[in-house]
Length: 77
Image 1 (cartoon, rainbow, N blue to C red):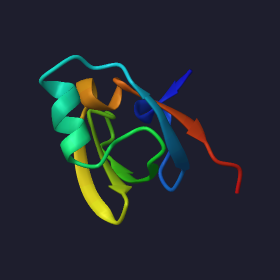
Image 2: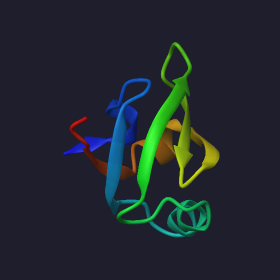
Image 3: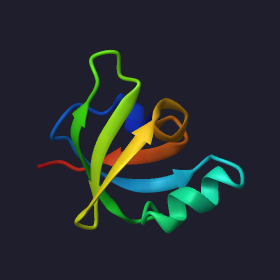
């Protein structure tokens, strides 16, 4: 089970499940981070406390708690 927080820069994955509870789950859904969405990590801090991702052509910044609550499947490129 891989999460966004496990991904490297430029790695592409598809969202499989959101583990967060409300209100965090609703916030992620409103940003387009939904089951089946393709995401790509474009940057993260050195300490891996925040991640910048692209989700459906939208740039989203996630904190550690948010990145750890999204289960993804890495796409083979």
